[in-house]
Image (cartoon, rainbow, N blue to C red):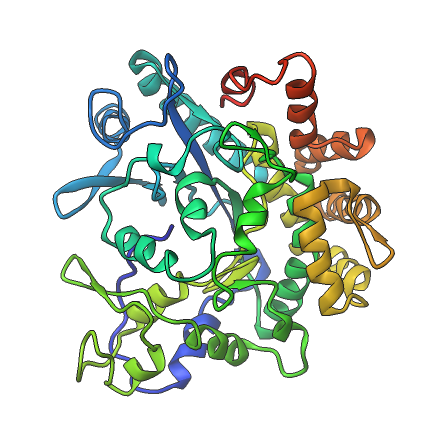
Length: 448
């Protein structure tokens, strides 16, 4: 989840909303790679989820990293909720999922070094505490009641709202983890092409990175239960965004969609004010019930943009959001996959040629098929395995064209395509075979 935004004065004109997005455009030589990954903390002796407070806790992890490795504390209402260092952030998801939001980097080699350094620091603090971290898309055993709540006002409001809309919102908040990559665009036209390719191929990422076949102690009938959860959350702010593929798509069309998403909150003086279900359009007119007579700032708009959760999201950059968290190697394959497709012009053009014939029903069908069947999905004559093979091939070519040796990081995906198995498939085979229906070994098999 995002941290509160800052900066930017009052919004004086409607055109500032699209201009805010457009201000992120930059030339290709300034494009960077920002990788984020979440992981579940657990107590190694009991396999219980890591609580916020106590001698073995999320708070103790943050304090240990702060004191031992030069991270600066981020607090809310006197509670330690995150860390900052050199353009990177460590933050908390609602159920205590420990998230690294990496610095903007130039290549996947730097991403690998950043991730390995982070995991090494985490291990040095966690090991003596008897704490481990799990790389999976959904908590395999824990129930909702077992999950501790992080002391963040944003999450208290969201938890309340999620209980009113959809059916799986709190499952998403407290018991799922993802890996995503944030990428740049050069212009409005470049943003549109990248967003269309990102949305159309997001089911491929869901299938390739599927690692959540268990929930509440048993198989759930899906390769990616995390993806299944997102389909029953809140239709006003999630999904595959069919309007993106229509004529006239641009920054303004995306702004109009975000404006139609009900608000969660307004952040003022270190506190989250309840604006659940209220309209940012009313806010622009000074008619927001939560702050009557007050006009929003650009930071309010930036905050509101973080409360929509489509499969690919645009702010001043673009976020690829369709993958389960997995092993270290898969977590690095995710940014490699998308960089290869998005940061080479020939690969991006070829990727669009690959998917431009899909209609909205096919794209949504692939999204559903990916969560249920992974690489075995087939929708409207489109075989997921074939589509994934083509997409990985284009990514590989794009990475080779970049000339930085990044294609090596696609190895887990190449292996999955060769064997026809994903992380989820392998865990299910072990569960039904060597593990004898016991999930205890998952805490070793999926430990980061």
